[in-house]
Image 1 (cartoon, helix red, strand yellow):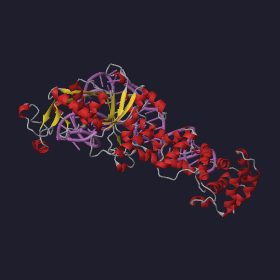
Image 2 (spheres, chains in turn cyan, orange; image 1 turned 30 degrees about the vertical axis):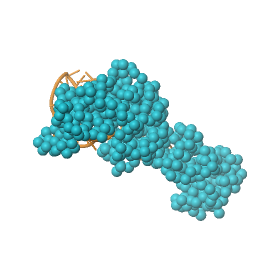
Image 3 (cartoon, rainbow, N blue to C red; image 1 turned 90 degrees about the vertical axis):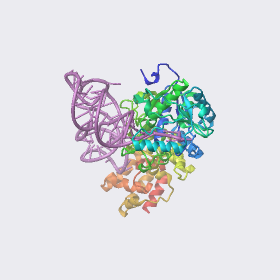
Image 4 (cartoon, rainbow, N blue to C red; image 1 turned 60 degrees about the horizontal axis):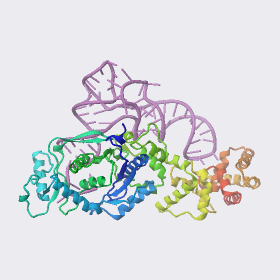
Length: 474
RNA sequence: GGCCCGUUCGUCUAUCGGUUAGGACACCAGGUUUUCAACCUGGGAAGAGGGGUUCGACUCCCCUACGGGCUGCCA
């Protein structure tokens, strides 16, 4: 059996990504979104987006916007409108009341101070610090006229089993689970209640999320049971760690997805890398999104946390840049420029870059690297050599360039002819091709790292090439 | 503290009781080469430790160590 029909009944798959808008889109969150998207799309299902903004203190519209931008960049499209969890608060409260009516929940009048006192005492005595409310079985007649929260009346005996598509069967003793708060004293729902209600109402069939929620799944299962709702297929995926194996944090460098865009990684490479991080399909390493959709399955998800490896990311990005068509590449490079707050391309640069793309795309791993190698076509005369290029333009080299120029003037402008011309000069001088290519590269690009000198001449054309040669030789 | 999860080359991983434990990235050496990238050849590199179960364990069970998570009127 596959994980998709673990619960027996085949339902159209519905997944969701449910981030809380309290900051940027975390790289780990992005992968969670990717897995949900891949699974839904691969199964011909639906992928929903829900913003978990019930924490009014920390939620911001800016963070929501950042999340949407991140998903958009990664190419993860969701179905329908993004749902605001906060706006569904009345529905959540309604379910809390329903649980009350069913005897699956109760009003708890304990104050924060009382709860804290309880925990301190428990800690001191070495008992469980799970709060045991005195109101759990209180007679409603004794209820004071005071603020209260609605707590889940969790079973005290027995155990709750979470059937997880990734983690396997995980059993929790019910006495380890507390009577979680479902509705706060101000009448707003807690996350624990809201997720369940929303996932149920939205018809979510597969909950794929970080394994920091594995414990929560047990308590949420109780809500499903209390309401008589079908429990979704759980899939708790391991978190992503930093290169040192510790929980990913800012000291590891980039943790926000947008930073990766600003660093110039192509979205396709990012998707490929993220998909491969914690999920595998045999020995396949390099693949398109279409293949990933086709192959993606919950069974292929690993159980151990994975570490970020920038070298591998770069390698995959390089491969994707090489196979992306020129127009799409240009488009993405312009988006990168904007994301990195770099000046946009001029019309002339856009044209030049397009004509040079064929000799740039398979020698760059990131957009900044590609742009650096494209400098020869991006820059205008006079070409200002960088330090290394300036060193390559010593008097002897300039003499060589001066000698080469007439040959270039008469050569037909094809790669073969250009190579022949350069070879002829090399032979006449009794030097290797490298002795000519170095200065030539410096004169044409002002750089020492570029595409082939012949490709550059082809892209630049005769007039521009000769002009640059004369600039450098002169 | 309690509960839960995890642990195969440096990294990502394959393996789903029987393999010389495979691949990729990275690294090292050599080759090719006009730079970079790419490419070719070769190399080093792994089952956390200890007990079981079994004819046979990386694979199953237990313990320990280490890492992570939860234990909130945060999500």
